Image 1 (tube, one colour):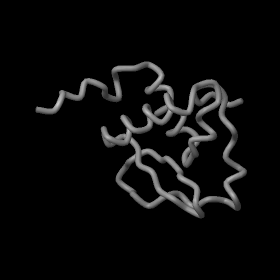
Image 2: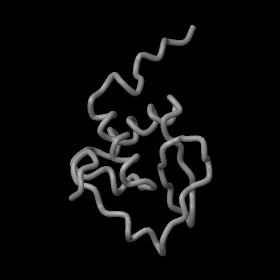
Image 3: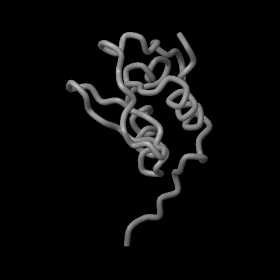
Length: 95
């Protein structure tokens, strides 16, 4: 029997900060979010948020972007190469 999934969007304060950062700066890449936190830890938070249906990811030009899940499931158009999306500091704060 599978172990119950106890991790969800609301069980870790950092996860809520990541979700807020994605909502503010979407679409964002893992590299833009990861400053100040390990890649593995950020990937875990993104996995939980995606599993809970709060965000979704899509690939454009070989780059994975994360965006909040809403009624409109079409990704926002990217301006140029995405360089207009600011690099975020620790846990999604502008760096």
